[in-house]
Structure formats: C-alpha cells, structure tokens
Length: 462
Image 1 (cartoon, rainbow, N blue to C red):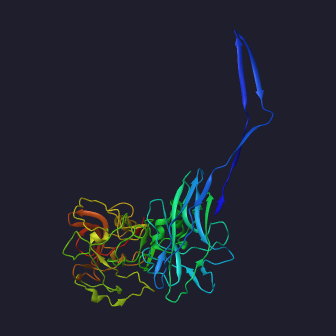
Image 2 (cartoon, rainbow, N blue to C red):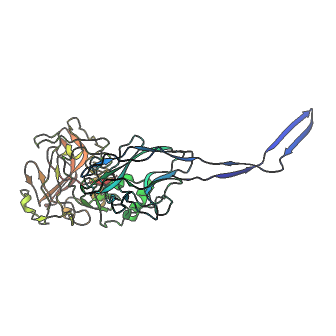
Image 3 (cartoon, rainbow, N blue to C red):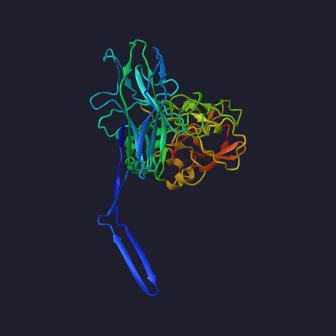
C-alpha cells in the first residue's frame, strides 16, 4: 500500500484582555504569550485493502475470476485525491508468473474483455475489473506496470476534486487459461495508491482508445480533449462492445460527432451501462418491422455506399457495390438500420409521444442520439454548417459524410438517393423525429418518420 498526505501549520497570537471599571476610571490588564501559539493539522487520507486476490478453480480452456476485495479510502482532504492500481514493480513485469517455472505466465490483457466470459481475451491473459460504490462492474482491463512508484501512470479507479470524498471500491481479477497451460500457482503484486490532489485534467484526444472513453472523462478532461481536437480533422476510436472502429470529428457546432454510421448488431444479449448509453441492463426483445413499438434492426453486411447518386428513390442495396473492411473502414459504411424503438434501447415505445426525449440509446457510453433542437441536434449542426434545402449536396462530403443509405422496411428504398437518421425525440404515437435529405436538394433536420422504419444512426458525444 502507498500513502501520501499533506499538512499545514498555522501561526497566531492569543490575546486576553480584562476590563475593570468603576465610574469613569478604567484599568486594563494585558497578557501576551512570549511565543506565538501554533498547532499542526494533518488531513487524513487512509487506505484499507480488505485482503488478497485468489483465482481458484481455473480450468484449462475456460476462465474464472477471483474473490472480491474492497479498497476503502477515508479522507477529509479538501483538495481531493486519486486512487490508482498498478502491477509488479519497475524491475518486474505485469505478468502473473508460475512459481515453479517462471517460463509460464499469464500476461496482462492488451484490450478490454467481456466481464461475463472474457470472450475477447486471448489465452493465458489476466485482467482486473472494479466498481465504485454501488455502480456496475467495468469490463476486464489490463493493469499497467508500476514503473515510477507514484501511481500516476496506474489504472485510475477514483479521481476526485471533491473535498472529503471517501470512497469504497470493489476490485477483482480474472484469468483465461489455454488448454496447454501448466498447472500451478501464478502470482504477482498489485499496488494501490491513494494520493492527495487529483490527477491533472490534461488528457487529449490522443489519450483515448475507445468510444466509451468519453464516458470516463471529468468535466475538465472533456474540455482539454475537445481543445486538443482540430475542427473537421478525422480521428478514430474503437467500440469496446464489438471492436469496430469509427471515425469521429469535432465539427463546426463545437460538438464531437461520429462521421460514420453505427454498425452495432443487436441480439448480443444484455447490454451493460458501462459500455452502452443506457442506465440499466437491457435485453432486446427483437421483433419484425410489422411493429412500430418493439425493437428491430437489419444488418445489410459490410457494405459501403459507392458515392454514386441515383436519380430516383427506388435505389436498393444492389447499388452499393463497395464492401468495407473493419481494418480499413469507410466514412460511407452503411452500418445497420434500426427502427426507432431499437435506436433508443427500449422494448416498447408505445407510450411515448408529444416531443418526449429519450435520454438513452444504443450509442456507446458517453455518446447519445442527437436531440430535436438546440445543442447536439441535427438542426443546430446543419445551421452551423450553413446547410439548407438546395445545398444538401455537401451533406455527404467532408467533414460529416452522411450516407445516402435510404431506408429499410423489409426491403431497401432510396439507396443512393436519400438518407434518414434517427433523433432521440418522439413526435407522436408511432412517429419520431429524424434528419432527412435527398439528391433533389431536400434537407429537413426536424423531419419525422414512422418508428417501424429502419433508419441509420449517428451519435454525438455527451
């Protein structure tokens, strides 16, 4: 365990004055200490770790996690603090090493892995997961090396500037073993650091790897990340949920937008709040497009719009002759089509009407569907870009790359001729607002469509 505290010393003078008076006669008695009165105040910052981490019953070809331990931080520090975790020491590695033969190891996860089954982990990898208070566990991640004994480069569990912000963190590790991994005890050291004063808010866009990293930023970090992005420049982040990469840009309205259509396949089971723009677990109850209130989606495959504009609204997916690779994705990736109920991550939207905004979606955590009007809306974006009806020819180009993907409702229409993108706001029973445009120059940022139709989805950072 590591601990660092600060203290301050205050100096003062103690003066005692007694006044005695009879009539108009006054006498004064004064006493002054020969040395200044002083005292020391030591703000408290204590760190208590409840026990050791042991992964038991790890079988070859399977995975298991450890017992849970708690890391309790108690403090009255006014400036806040950070709590981080590292593995090993500067002279070792992050590997869990077989105590009988150090040639056999479990290496620290290179990328995040599913909390349920570590399905995206490689064999013989290990990682940590944690939650703060009553929050939901994160997915498994790899712990960084303890290379400077300060904790500043560790995995951040808590970073707060709030005074006296005591926390309880629950922590565990998990591992996935290959069939040929030798049996034995694999061990290393995990270090926890509680240090007064929070980590500086100096993150930039280059510090982010995943779309979901936007959800972990403090207010100050969001400002520095936004300031580090050049307007209209392209950046690329991965979606933790399926590993797919997406282009993003800071656009002229001052917000960070996806400049590529969402391609998340539904039917993955439970969606977790740490990864998805929802506040609680959601299991999609998928249905056909005959319903406008139950979630549906259609995956057309790895198709890209080829840039050719059709002269009418009958275009189909056959017009998309280009295929896309996840290794080299395109801004013109068609992505999936979602009915509105699926886009807002609900299983029944029948009660929503009259401009109700649904503050959740299938966007990555830290991102949301655009709203109807105001900041983070299509209307605000197109106005800032000076895009109006008659000028929509620019809407499919740099920097926004909105795709003429058409619409899906048991078949596609309008491919190469127009595009439709959901907002988060219901219009009336059976309808919701969207962005619509076509090759004839029509552009309406506050259009509405039937909820059963499969439209494209773009997300904007919260």
